[in-house]
Length: 183
Image 1 (cartoon, rainbow, N blue to C red):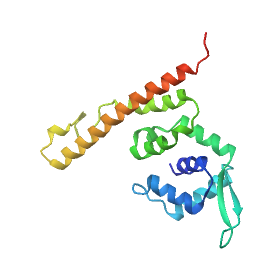
Image 2 (cartoon, helix red, strand yellow):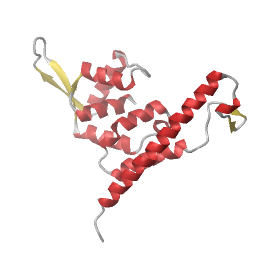
Image 3 (spheres, rainbow, N blue to C red):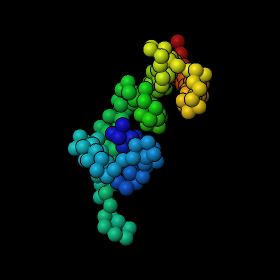
């Protein structure tokens, strides 16, 4: 997900390493803090793969600063990753939020809708954090207020996301329909 987040943020504008780290922390920091020991090797790998370039700019009061810019290959890699997210990107909420943060960078509404439909299908599957054999347990089955609360919060969040997905898919489908040539 770090690669996707870096490419997505640099798609929006070139950033200095420190700025990139700050933006990454805002996107994922409370869930998955990113250390310099993780970020800078990832930047170097993306640079070696030709997905981004580092340009040196004069510093305003100190040493020159290095700005990271996305290359055309980086833009293509971002689009490919957004078009075909891994199953875990669809099912893991934190990874899903990273995909969702940059899905607008896919130009075709039909491609955006295809990704949203995968998430919708995932959310429509019966699920729980707790099971009795194969049967998912619902919030109402727990005397434990903490497990009941966990399940109620998850249910409410899922219902809100399902409503948003259905609404957004309707908008995307309407936009894709109006973009089709007549006849």
